[in-house]
Image 1 (tube, rainbow, N blue to C red):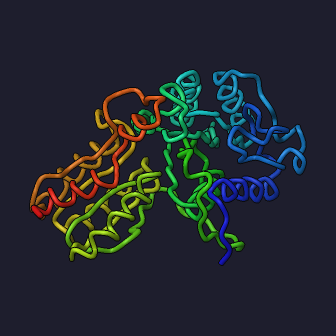
Image 2 (image 1 turned 180 degrees about the vertical axis):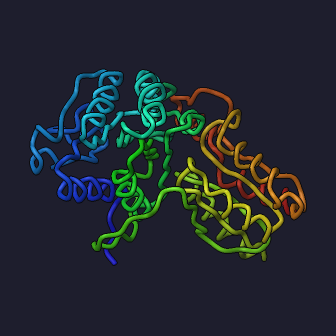
Image 3 (image 1 turned 180 degrees about the horizontal axis):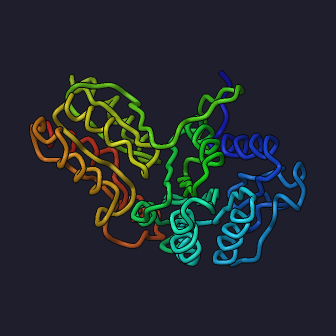
Length: 326
């Protein structure tokens, strides 16, 4: 099977869907001639024209608002917010409008919009361009939140998000754009709301997503040599969350660690831990649930400090040892 990058997989998904459905449009800052801040949309304006690939003013409130309005009038917009941090400026359109319209109008109006947004640290972009704010959107009924970890998942999940009739926040960790993975040329779609067991194991369950998946997988490969068998579950969709797959895994292994890049307070990791504690899996736990998350500080510009605020391979390995009393 061919290998392409994460950003190429996202571009393919958008292009294939735009060829399939002429009602799909793409809005964002510098997505046209420039090809996007991270090069995701290179070549798209040449194929689809400026009527469907629209460079917007530098106003996230306007971009998200235009997306909501377009969706309400029959189009299916893909909206790119250049950095997830800037979603703060678009929160009214996303949280007060997009998330609530279908419910408030009894299904007679809907907002089939995808909000693509690069998130996370690792690029030296400092405190105002490096946040992971997915938990904010998970808190809002009416929104779906998707966090693909591989090129294969990125393409399949984005196609499903575009075809969905609800607003979807599609979170892309910036360091993943350049990673390569196997992606088939044939048509495929990954359903939203379904987790995936990335690796089977029997001693411990680790739930993780986004950039942290590759780190967890590296550590899991290392500890296998020490006769430690770890099962890795990637939720892929954070809302609606497939808690059943996670619970089934914890019942099997008896231990749980949740790893995410965002800060621990109010994070997705805490929600997963609480749901497991409320489920039948609680009776199968052989020890406390452990959360690994970003430090409680703004992301530093200094590269050494920036690296220190995100769970490292050594921290993940030590967490495994702690939970298993090794």
